[in-house]
Image (tube, rainbow, N blue to C red; front, side):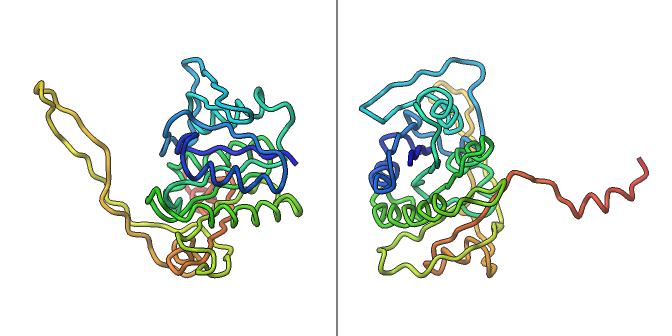
Length: 247
């Protein structure tokens, strides 16, 4: 088996190093990841400037682009064979609910899915750089083994969120749905030393809706959350409702 690993925290992040090392039990691992942090890059491609690639050591490639760029570079240029699986992560921080639309981690798995390659996005439920990445990596290996053995349904990739705790403290994995959150946006407005205005986009601490069956509900109770995702964003119920409009 040949597995490609990427992320959005950068090639030197603790999460990707733990993930790449753990996945070696399943086959050959090649890392193609951004040369620096690209969190919240979403599903963006670099189209108006060239990309540069640096081979840090054998099987480790740093790309000065987004996670989506990395998946494209790996599959179409850097890897000598088409990968059997793409695993993105381990992200420093969860990717739950509506936040997946911003996530470079999830977007990398989405890009692989568009190319017909089974893909998994893996995130750890903490922003602490000293989180339980080794325990999370072992969960990722178990999920990856199942995907390699059984495949995935058509047009499906997995968003896996793992509680930040020791392996023995985790509860059994749950298959979940994408949750929702109450988002309060915030723009920080300040003046630099030269008297020029600048703005910093941020938000207050998000409040996830703790609904049974959702990714947040599972993580909040120390379960591993496994959410099957796909790219069809069509609201099919609205097709029926909008069909009644006079246009």
